[in-house]
Image (cartoon, rainbow, N blue to C red; front, side, top):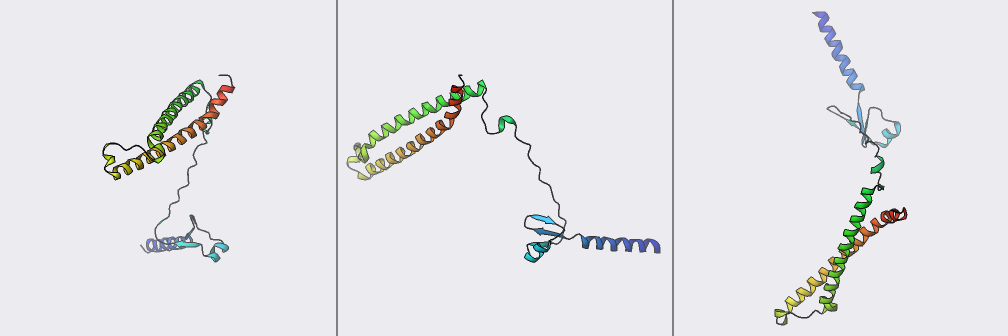
Length: 165
């Protein structure tokens, strides 16, 4: 019985000594059990007290496949999709430019013709002028966006046209 008790006492004392040697420090976003002299002098590392620290290694993502490297593939299906996208963008651009011409004609350089009740109520007229101006600005922004998308597609369609397909 005395032997078992003494073994338990020795085992518990070894556990406390072992725990005292396993101090864990947090140095910025890094956890370590060894602190360099430079870190100690700069006081960038702090002792982590209480509880356990579990460190999970980051998993590196697999390297990208050949088609996913940001370059467009030059398959017939992709060329057809690019061509369809170009046609859709061209039609959207034409529609937006037509709408912009109509809005500019109605806006009449900031003095559109008064309609109905606007002859008696100046605020309605001013509200319509402001709405026309805002619609023209939105439509102009849409046109610029469509042109950017067409310009982004242009190199891909130029390279397929240069290859003779």
